[in-house]
Length: 226
Image (cartoon, rainbow, N blue to C red; front, side, top):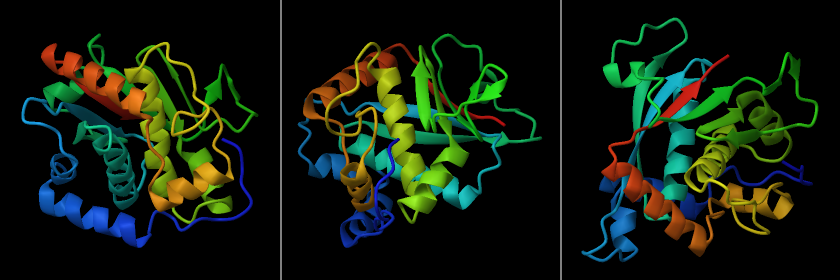
């Protein structure tokens, strides 16, 4: 993502704090109901299996998950996070062990993005290919150190962006919103304020795909590796 000129407020504005209170009080669903989803509209839920092989601090990871959840909540989709352990920990949960299930959508949280045997040199924050999405935790740290006070905030939005690619296959980047190819200073400021979102047409596509996946019993898998 492109760099900006100054840091934002690290997703800690009054509005984002208010959203956090509502999220906890409503179990992650109150905001969706408040936004007027009709009784005939089924609010889809995507279950995320989290493999923290990158050894991200649990507090940071939980906060990043909350940021991504808020983005998808505004799209009318609930994200349900399921911890599957981390580095050196055995995977005993059958759902977590089904890593080769073709229905799984994987999002890898890696230290750095590899291009063959070499590190990328273009500052890539993330990418998605097929049903695999990848986000660089180190790159998120580098950008947050320069632009945003809160790495959890940027990590959450990067995860949401790449999940957007997975849920909207073949959909190109947009000129505005969270699905821009390169976030500029305006976008980073909106990320800091917790207000960067999917566009209306993207929200409809994501809801439709989430409902289709739910009907097929699919599970989204988030896997973070070295």
